[in-house]
Amino acid sequence: MSKTTDEAVLLTEQLASLESLEPQLRQLISAIIEQQDFAAHFNAEHVIKLQKLQPDTAQLLRSLVPLAQTYSHAPISNFHVGAVALGISGSIYLGANIEFSGQTLGQTVHAEQCVITNAWSHGESVIKQLAISAAPCGHCRQFINELTDASEINVLLPSQQPIKFDKLLPQSFGPSDLGVNDRLMQSSINDIALNSDDQLAQQAISAAINSYSPYSSCPSGVAIATSDAIFTGRYAENCAYNPSLAPLQGALINLRLARISFNDIKRVILVEKQLGDVSQDAINRRILEQLSVSDYQRIGY
Image (cartoon, rainbow, N blue to C red; front, side, top):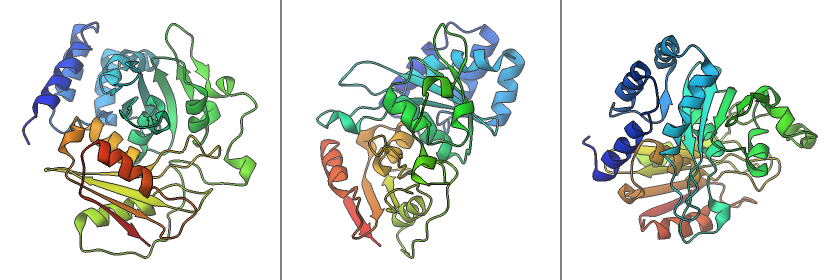
């Protein structure tokens, strides 16, 4: 798959973001991100190589924040936030804020939500360290608090000493306060009896099965098709409700992190409960209309 103009421009920006790094480290990172299938994820093997050149893991994460910021899509605020997460697997993930012109600000994806979705999509179960270009807002602190061992996450902020997450969110309200034992990135599989011969629908069903909705019991998933690939998103609920991340946003995150333009979206399928207390359908239609996507289908179970 050859690079589009948008992808080529983004790659140029990403390479430029590495200019302040030590030459050998810059050369290694450049070689990794220039790979066609790079999707804002350094696997454990990559990280081992990077750590030979930068043994201080916290500093390595901080040094990747400018790269993470290049994924930002902020046509409303023009404020570009980057986040870098180290998972328990040893992999490193990138994320950035994503905004949608013409939509309510509540549809904005925060960088912390983006990087956690990236890690979750790659099968990560625990976040150990999190470097961010700016202090996380209350919305993001609440979203992070949905994770297993959230209190132990080492948060790295600009020009500050590392701080444990529980210091950023004292007297927190979390899943346990609502009697929920599951956690985001470590939750039970949803029992959804639905089948399809359509590959895109199959991917949306799988996303719904693996989504996280312990508060509404309304699992949902989205699959997006471009000319060359399929991207999925899983519903990620939050005990405070408002910071919940819709499955369409999750799919758009994965598409953006794969350096694919929203203009390349050809078809979208939502799978959700037919008569649930929560529906993603109406907001999906508004966002997809703004993105000029007309081939959209809702499948109820």
